[in-house]
Image (tube, one colour):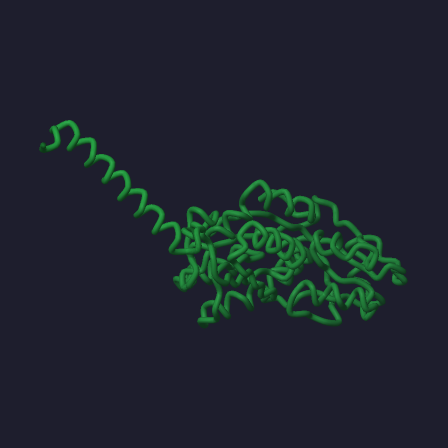
Length: 268
């Protein structure tokens, strides 16, 4: 006796269900039973990310980099900290970089004008402070003291954002300061102070905070001070655009902004 139409349809449905289950099982077993697709593994971000960042960002960006790698285990973040002007030149000359974080508008614009970045975002600002060795043997207590010939002063080179800001500070306050050394970046100025090689150095507020007990900070009144903006952008030639964009977004996120605030940076 031939099967009824209803029985035939029921048999076909059973066979189809079994086939679908078999295909699903085969797909799952192809990776040892674990779904390793990007959506299943979290963000799907992976690979290396090189962040070229202003030296004044060393501490807070290292902290953020560790957190970013913890959130994205497939990504390795490597930092290149130096003067923003040096970093801009490196990027324009073709040095590998995925993200550029600059301590001034002008150095970021250099990279943008070269076509190596676009649409940078201002993410923080900073102002200047005088740092002296803890003993402060030169008795530096105000900005005007830096003009004394008896006080040895370290500053950044004019090409570096910290140097340009320092020169603007002296010009606006009509101070004639003759530094004994011009350093390539702000952390080098700080080193001159902590090693007791100079009586004072002009650095950022954040550098004094980061140095802690290794320096004595002499604040500059807001009415006499100058500030600089920090901008960040993915580098156009990045070979890992997804992770570069994600790191930039992380810096701009509430978590990144909180870390910057804790480090002494101000809102832009």
